[in-house]
Amino acid sequence: MASSEAPSKLRIAISGGGLAGAAIANALFRQPHLDVHVYESAKEFSESGNAIGIAINAQRALSMIVPDADNLYRRVQAMQKSSTRFRTSGRDQSHRSRGEEQGYTIHRAALLRELLAPLPQESLHADKKLEKIEEFNDGSLKLQFQDSSSTVVDTLIGADGIFGSVREHILGSDPSLLVDQENPSAFAQWEHRDAPTYVKDRVCVAGDAAHAMTPWQGSGAGMAIEDAVILGTVFSAVKTREQIGNALKAYDAVRRPRTQRVAESSRRTGRILSGLEDGVRLDFQKMHDALASRWEYIYDFDLGKHTEEALAVLERLSAE
Image 1: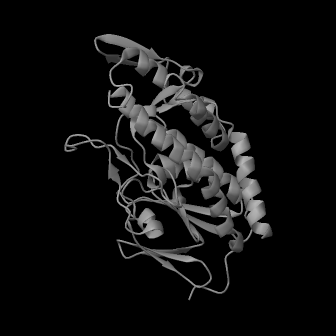
Image 2: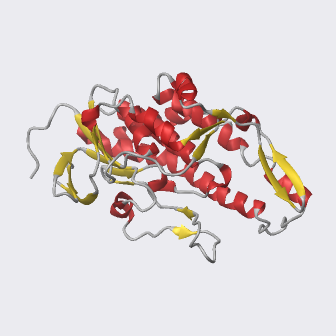
Image 3: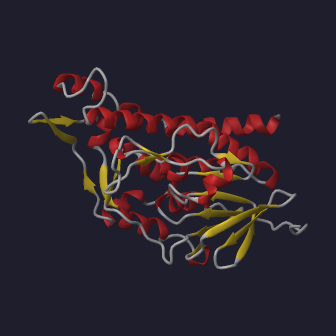
């Protein structure tokens, strides 16, 4: 049994210390009623890979969780983006949208360093691979790690990537799909498609653990940062442990439709760019027309309204 004397602060564990986990921690740790800890399975907090795109929608989200986001771009030497260019049938084609013109390209490790910097050192725990999640009758959770250590928390947010264990806890056996590749040995594009939920009781997934997507629209990191904003929003309204379940349901209600739409759109964009889309193939003009407006709903997104929708869902659930 968990202790009958509940601590004053809500205890939040984030499994995964990459960009998604660090962004979520930034959205939560400044709230005085929350005690936030990040558990990373690797021996140190780090990011692999080169650069990521931070489009205008991701910038709006980042500014809502990082007070000095404008200075952050200067510190990481972010590069301004102008357009997306690709070549087909011997011709250069350039795609440009308002959101992309205002976008940045940032090195992954540099962005992670900036997101980790403001977090209290005592809240960051490396070499903590999550092995088991045990639920108590009062709703609290015991997290068992590979090194035999454990902790008890009120809620768990899984930001542990494509092969993370938290998604399996929520959905059971739910393998990733390898997209349109006969021989994936050199480079694999993984995606999670159409999960029925991102939530189970007081556990949820975010970032790639919830909605891994192909890179064709450069939106994976942006969706994770938007996830962080909504988690920060709903937890700002949670004052008791009994409200946590509804907060996660509200997060799921608004984030799952948005992120799954982007994941599916990214997949189809890849098919268009690869000449695989029926009715388009390698026809230059048809490709141009098919791509013309595919980024607009991603960039021209009202995140403020999105937060209001999440709070409205939470209020409705709490009144039931």
